[in-house]
Image (tube, rainbow over all chains, first blue to last red; front, side):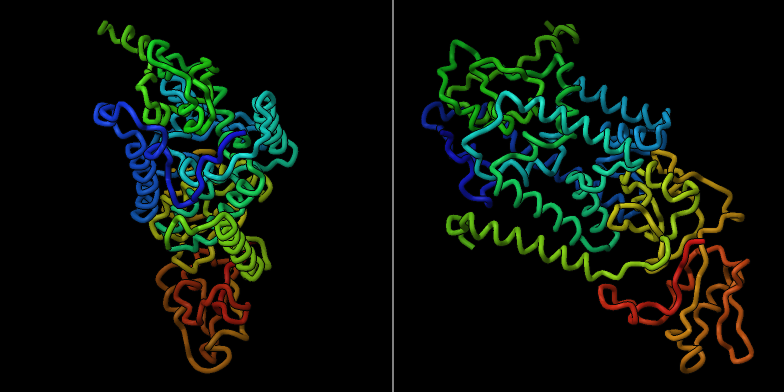
Length: 284
Length: 188
């Protein structure tokens, strides 16, 4: 029986108060990842809002870029190509840029840029979880979203996408429109999440599922438990938004590189393995 | 509010309340009777535009006059309430999918302005020619008749929406339709 992670919705992250009795000096040695992540998300939202306010046309999380330098949401692009049943080359190149970035950095969009990281995944977790079937459920939702776009000739998920709703809210702030539609839809999703005991980001989100599938090809940034220091206490599992148990060396394709495990580990046993990057640079 | 006193039940009530509020707003918000006017260079049938639009809002972000708005389906449309279309084609240049494309500004026709004679001040009460004064500078599509009441030349009108922007009738969105502007954009 798992303990509900966040007893209060106001509290942002429980890492500060969790399981840190020994080795307090690690706080000074580790960067404050949560602050960096929050700052990055906030910066991205401010860029979206101000670009709409000053009419810079930089776009949103769905499609971002200036001039010919463009990245686009791969799920949105897949839906548009399925809906129009036409291959759009420059759109596919924009999605390919996102895919390459995801292969280099992993699923960083979910951990560092998506504002949904801060509003979802905070409810109590149901005691029964479809642990084994989760990957299949996500893949099924992903295929269903693209299939629905193909059948109805309309990228329907883009309308209800919470990331898109947040972006629409940011645009509305920038251009002086009403943010009520965005807030209403997001609160409906958060309420459903709390009532059902599931997590949108971990169990349902097709955008995250697609990024996870791409991130399986990422060889670089991987948190690993140092077996010399690790004495399995489940601090990483309880703090990981994807419930990855590092002591059991899980499949890290869903890892969002948020480094909550690094901050949470009381024994400083989580190491970010960047050996291949170091080999690549030739520093070692 | 003390966070430790904020219970799960209260949180769910808050979330449900916000949801109900926005659903109510959505239902009460007046919907346009005719098809919405798309930004210039939009793909021709509305079904094709709906399929090709990524809903990213890049056109909204790029529009220099904040003319483009997003509807409940997150599709861009122009109603002329915040500003009118200058046919600068920034939206077409910004669009990542090609649902909006840069087109010739002089031959593009977005829609047509129609005047609601029951709401128009010149048709009901006294002389007002704000839309005429604005259109004379742009397209000369609005003319005044013998009683100095505005008439729209449907051939000349390119649907930029400047007459809607300058119309002095109140624009209280969210109320019933009789509070809207006296001139509206209608897709062809």
